[in-house]
Length: 187
Length: 328
Image (cartoon, rainbow over all chains, first blue to last red; front, side):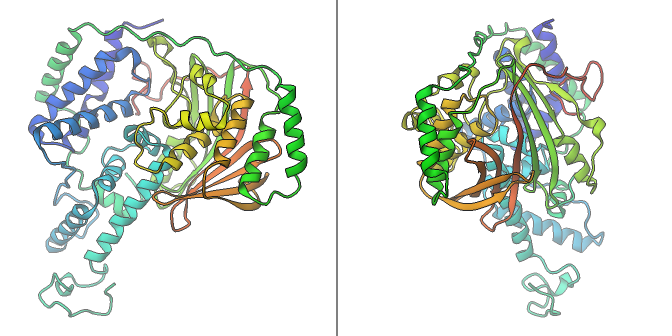
């Protein structure tokens, strides 16, 4: 009944390598990402007999540790940086688009690393709450609270930065050409 | 990806969207695979030994003590500590069934992941020392919520086999953080002081308070583990010994069962409320809320106990040849 371990590992490797690579690329310098992913799968291979069947969150947890270790060793910054200018569901007006992208970037930069990690696991890595809790090594309940607060803080930061949707960005205090000229819609 | 405008907006700024590998990336990945598997795999760790079921009846002395305690405290407990100690004594007297598997059936409402709550959805687990089968509606409910729908497609719900027996490892652990093997659970002390200490031994830093770690682990073991009656008593006693636990009063849980509610506040996490039946020492429901009183996660234990049978695992949704661990 037991499949040859190398075949099972190969299947999992091929199925999950892209996900792990993107996970790492979101968190570190692009030029070292593939080396770190190789290290992740080398660890998985060395522990293959004990790797849990639900291997995806486990691999992400290992990847997170490998990235953190690399960051400590080489003094790299934690990235988890936004891709500016690639947002969807925003006004097509170029100025508004650019403004909204910058606003999100500013709000994101003001979040703590823990908040960014919680949000990224869900919004970028596409994990469920249970999987994200496994990656972080915390309980499902603790992650639920952590995500809720991070989401709320991001929303508040955005609200602090951005004008109301129907306000004219050009007259938004601190950002427009006529600071202080508002139309009664400012928060 | 999500109905939350903030998260959807964030998702749109994903610095490395999930995408198939390029031809060059694929070639490099295959080279990595070849290099890794050229080395010998390490030997598997020893399989865990068979779980020892607890005795079918609680010790007579313990039962007598529980009856006396229930008589004293059973009328109108005036504090959370009294309720928890009553639950402790009564938990120790509960009859113990027999069966190959430990079955847990929970219903979950998750408001922490999205602004629109997910669920209620059901989750059933069948455990034995060598087996872990789960039938969870979570992914189907999540997919429905992402499309703004309140009902989900039942064909998306499968019985999944997450046992590691075929690979020589253990089944998914028991408890929250850390997780125990069946043998380790059986070896946990039943003296509350020793247990409280044991629950945090080797505990990875959660980043929260020590009291939360103890509380969280004790609640997790009461909620969904084959803890023997003596251990359940000790777990309730551990909770009774934690500072700041308050009695809320009589209420009913989401399944309409009579319950007594207690709660504890954790500065950096929020509040957790436990709905329990002190007369049987059964934990019925947990409700985790944030500091502003919004319930984020509610878990109702509908059924828990030994079973003789478990369902057969169903093929993954991706079809033959897919990797069970890979969501698809």
